[in-house]
Structures are given as C-alpha cells and as structure tokens.
Length: 399
Image 1 (cartoon, rainbow, N blue to C red):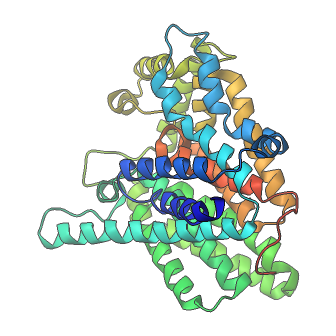
Image 2: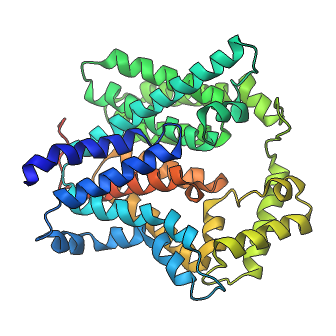
C-alpha cells in the first residue's frame, strides 16, 4: 500500500512547493491540503512517534508560533482563531517533513522545483506587465507597480529570487551538471528581475550570501589574487545594482503611485512607534494579533507616522513583530529557531542552507516575513528541510 501511495505523496510535495511563489494563495492552500492528505495515507504510523521523538526539538521550535498563539489566548480577552488558523503551517510542515524525509537528495529537488517556480512566477508577471504596456494600460515594471502583476508583495518575491539565484549558482560552480546554460540563463534572468523588484534589503542578502559562498565553497581552491578579484567583482556588482536607475528611483521614494518608499528617518520613527506599542502591551507574552495591531496603529498616530497610520503598516521587522504578538517569549523562540537552524546548516556543511538561514535573518530586520502566508510557508518548509538534513546523517547525491 505504501509503495503505491509513494508517487502520489512525492508528487503532492512538489506541487505544493512549486505553487509557493505562484500567484493566488488559494492554489498553494489547496496543494497543502492535498499534501497533508497524501501524507496521512503514506505515513507509517507504527514508527511515527519514534521519529517524532528524535526530531522533537526542531519541530517544537519551528511550530512555536502556533503554540504561542494558543498560549497567548489565555492572557488576552478573546481567542484569536484567525491567527491560530494562519499559523497552522508552522505545525503541519515540520511535523510532516521531519518525520517523513531522510534524503538530502529530496531537499535538492525541493529547491530545484521552488527555484523554477520562482522563474515561472516572474515570467507570468513580466508577461502581464508587457501586455498592459502594449495595450497602454499602464507601466508595471517597477517595485510596487510590479507587485500588482505578481499578486504578491515584492519583498517576498525578492526573498524568493535571492534563494533561487544561489541555488542556480551552486549548481553552476559546485556540481557542474549538464544543463549549465539553463542555470546561467535562469541566474541572469533572476538578477534582472531583482533589478525590477528593487527591494533594497535583497542587495545586502546578495552580498552576504556571495561572501559566504566564496568563503565556504570557492576560496579553499583559490589563489590570493583570485580571492581579491572575486570579492571585488561581488562588491562592484552589488554597488552597481544599488546605483542603478530603479534602485535610485526607490531611494528617492519615486513611484507612479502615491506610495512612498520609507527613508531611514521614517523607518526609525516607524520602529520607535513599534517599541512603544510593545511597552504598552504585555511585555512577556505579548498582546496578540488584534490587540497588538490596535496598539501599533494608535502609536503611529501618537508619534506622527502618517503613512503608517494611513496604510496600517505592520512592524516591518519580524523580531519586533514577534514581540508585539507573543512578547519576549516569542522573540526568544524565534531567535532560538534561527540559531538552531544555522547550527544544523553548519554541522551538515551545506553552504546553501547557511545562506538560506542568513537570508531569513537579514530580511527579518526590515520586513515582517512571517505575517503572510507565503512567508510562513517558505520559512516552515525550508527550515524544516535544513533541520532534517543535519547531523551529517544525509550525504549529498553529488559527492
């Protein structure tokens, strides 16, 4: 029975993964339901509890927002069922992945499917933007305008793009597989797409990720001159992107809509309001989603952060967002999850896993990654696989 269900189980996994970067939340939600059903049918329940016990620490850490949402309800006026439902993937994905998969080869396939899914999503978005341009319906080749045709916030797409870029770069330089020209083409396409998206934090991730890749993968075989040249090329490339017209347009807060990108001064004012709202709530267990958002919006009004009050911004910092919702306890669990995942990535000597964790850490400084479904899904999915591929139990199929 298990052998018959196995193809359906793995097919449902890849369907779920490729729909993460695609437009429309509903498609990914339906594929997640299908993935859970296939897991229930496929799973060997006689030994499931033993597998759960062996992986209980990462499962508990990754699923902590779900449990904290329930725990938090005992300290606030109402039970936030919407928050609990939204946080379900934090529980579902690590439970399935850490008790079902034991091959690093599968993680490589997951990253491959996800990366090509990012390329597909961008192709759909660019095609729509091109059609709008041809029929004189507007220009959608920049930042917030581009997000309308992508049907997602550009920050999430920037995170997707950076992860996909490093997947293709790894295949080009490390594994040297036959379809290198496909990887070259996809890498160039993703870099050009990153220029259109113009998310500034993505450049920092690109720089840090490149340095990590050079240090762990290429430097051991490089001469001193090659090392210096490599660092110079990476630095010049990132600076060149930052000085490019689209990024400069973003820095000058210029857009075809009335949206204004945050400057450094408004960002500090934003975070000042967030910190004050945290202090007015329950410092240790947080204020929950509804009460936390209410405190935050009121604080925007008090400090004079007009755009934040008008558009009802979130904290734009996952560490602060976590503290608003779940207090210091929630912040501790988030940091512990990231540290644990980084430890697992280093221990398994997987440079791409290290870069992925670093990407989450950096993006969370300026964005509340875990407040929307795409962020929750991607974080739970990749961090779960990183933990599942740790302890040197799993050997790469390429080595």
